[in-house]
Length: 114
Image (spheres, rainbow, N blue to C red):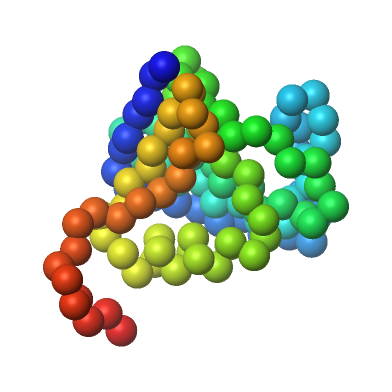
């Protein structure tokens, strides 16, 4: 039941009309992905084509890599958080990979952000 939390120090975004990967032995189609990196770990978030096979999220502790598969509609929310919040953390959990994702650090109540 390994779990890991790390601060995101860099991220990259990939966009295309159609991108493919494989998971669980099946083809997965997506239009965007965000890779969050920090402390020798990474989380790759795939934003799936509406007709794609939806694999289970996963965390591979030996590879220090987690995956999350979300609907395309969630892409802008992730980009907004990564661009506008600090610090940002990733959480990876091999026992309950549905929790794989990003979260913010503590912020003051009523913080007025542009």
